[in-house]
Length: 145
Image (cartoon, rainbow, N blue to C red; front, side):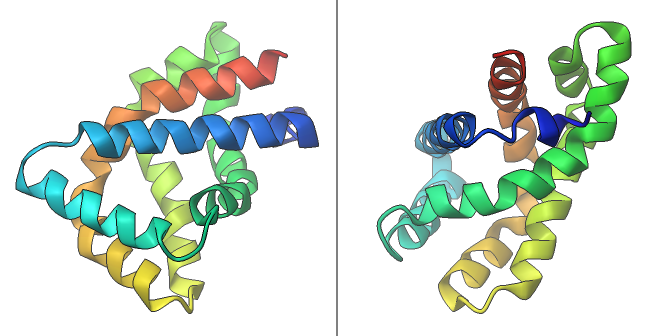
């Protein structure tokens, strides 16, 4: 059974999505400097598309993201701590997450989303790496319950 199979419960999914939205909100809020201002503005623009847009995007991205993370999660299961394995390999984990969002953006017809993503894509890997410990803990929490 893969990681996404274990999280394929609609009650879990709603809570998982909510926790991921909170993680992203916290990461964006904590971002400082000029880059942070730009990121906050772009995130605000994307959130302003329609209420619940971020949550619906995460819900759509969740299955392919979990599928992309499944091989690494399985490696971590062999060591007994899959969440820590994702954290210890945060660069590789971030690449897996970003491969999913990159593929999704290529298919997007929404100019605001595409523009915001493309504006920050080159610098976003470090931000995603910073979020990996939180993401790994969220996934671990829901994979156990």
